[in-house]
Length: 329
Ligand code: NDP
Image 1 (cartoon, rainbow, N blue to C red):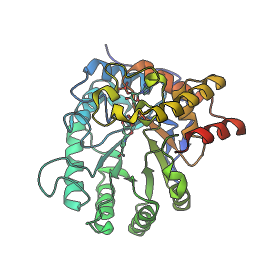
Image 2 (tube, rainbow, N blue to C red):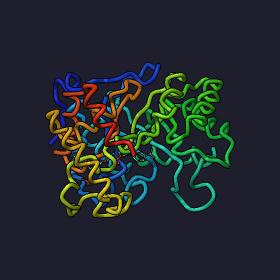
Image 3 (tube, helix red, strand yellow):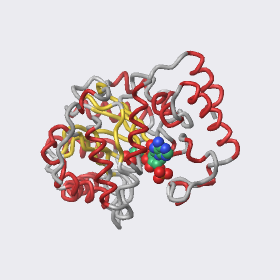
């Protein structure tokens, strides 16, 4: 059936300004790293994407190698875009990245101009779009001059194939250098995409200050620690869960100590009237410098539960202190 987006979708969730740019992002964005490869039925993917858009999620995050196999998440997303969401392209923020291994040989990964620009062209073809909204350097390349990597992002923007430039997982120092190079080229750094969750707080040690100083936004990936910060692993590893597959998140991480943390956090969440996933997301957004929490979801039910986190974003000082006591590693 022809998809028609829900009325009232922009009254449902907050949008936050991305640094000092003109762009606002939904407080929760949807990533397609897992759950959108050829290992998942297209109908489920379509249902998640439609529901997300109906609930006000305007931002969809991809990368060249999301799948499996590599490239398939962009192909599948492109298909749903073409069949369902194409009339809404101007209401959507689509991002992609290049940096990790994508094709064989010396030009298929890292940060050369050769790789980044070829990869962007491939991503546009796979998704069937003329441009992406954000193009990221997926990781810092210690062997390529930063001027070359940033020059490729600047070129992507000037050629109209991307509207904005971003970096992912760069250290605070490299981020400041990247932002300075981009600024000089006339293409400001829009956004940084780091990992961040109650179990992984590295960005509090300088990166957020750097981004604030540079006027760049922050979109936090894996805010649920790939599912560990939900109730799902408290009684073992459910069949079909990400940990049961052991690809990017191994059940070995579910140590007794980690699970003890998670149980205590689960109790704090329950006392707030939230699920653990909801509290974890609200927590990741408590600092206004975090523009958006970038989640994954393998079902519509997970997506809905997670978006409902936005109904309660405030924390008492006691709650924050209790989380700090238990969550800091
Ligand atoms: P999350 O931490 O949100 O983990 C998502 C997974 O947790 C889901 O796929 C699902 O796994 C489980 N889950 C989610 N909600 C619930 C719920 N309510 N109840 C129970 N289980 C739940 O994020 P991801 O690790 O998926 O990363 C999100 C996005 O961030 C990626 O898609 C990608 O866009 C980006 N990213 C970027 C990286 C980078 O280097 N820049 C690296 C990693 C991610 P299950 O299959 O078990 O149901």
